[in-house]
Image (tube, rainbow, N blue to C red; front, side, top):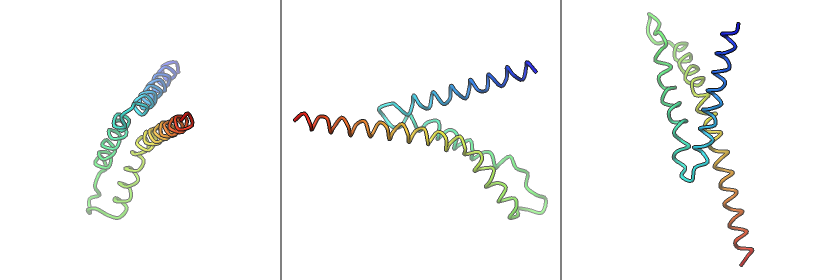
Length: 107
């Protein structure tokens, strides 16, 4: 039981670190660093459907549907990272507009 608790704590710590890294990269002046983690997770999600075993009678509609579901579930981290990125960029854009308005008010 103690071993499971330690592993769970380490996994949660790792997830918090990865999310903190995404926040840090998304807040950079350049927009490209914030897209690194979503790109990496998207590329890994392309590999997940390749792990499925093809049915003996060939590709069926059920197999294709299963591959699509696996791919969508594999993209959950991509969607989370993109949501963080978009939220940070929107906040940065809004702050920039407020700064412009304040400068115009001073003139």
